[in-house]
Length: 370
Image (tube, rainbow, N blue to C red; front, side, top):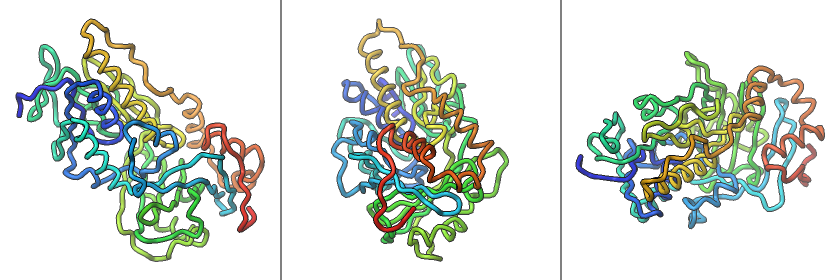
């Protein structure tokens, strides 16, 4: 096993890691992906909510319809639970059966010729004359760390590491239906979600409800998701007192791209590289883009040994504006102004810009007044 030779070893079989591996395999290169999980559908740390652009990624081509549910609207709630319904023509978000989605992506990776090895934790790598040796895995010209917010590759290889985080927890309820299933329900509340928000959405298998807060080193108390769910139950139709069928939780980088993110034949991708929107905490689309770009970059380099490595420029923007908004959200979040301004035209316009990329606007609500 230790004599196996690859062009690239990718650590982490999430969205970024598999997108990277898919590009490499498409270029005829030999790639191995390792992941410490024995089952890609277990111990998840992602909401699995996709934006429309993410569904256009080559990695998700042929995604079975049964694994996704289209959600065409956002209902945004002020702390006092007044709300506004937003949408855009031909734009959709998609909730997923996330465990099944991850397993499907693993199957697709193997079908593409990727050597996917589960139950294999990365511990270290040793520099060789022409690459890296990963004990127990083999040798590769390049090593890619796509192993999440607390990247072991970044730690062991001396690369930049994420230092700013949100902490999110999500409950899933199988077989439950929301009162308004075609909306992604988002709740602003400094009481329950300081530094971020709460959400409730219909999925292909039931309902997912989550809460994320700004994480500070040494903080031990988890988000009060039980209190949050009781608070929003009258608006969503969630059954009171029901225990969740599954729980997922984890850290979400929110400080922007790390530096350095590549050095000496080792590169970081996705969450490990900080490629997550500091404001919205959306990491799937950014991870897909960044992972695929890293894969194409390495494929070009490996196919032409005379070609130098491209400059260390991230494949997604540096999020300068969103980092500024993140600072403001951290230091100037107050419930009273949001209660007053949420339904005002300027606030609606700002939200639609952030949510729909300059598309869309307030949607008529036939059932109730905002």
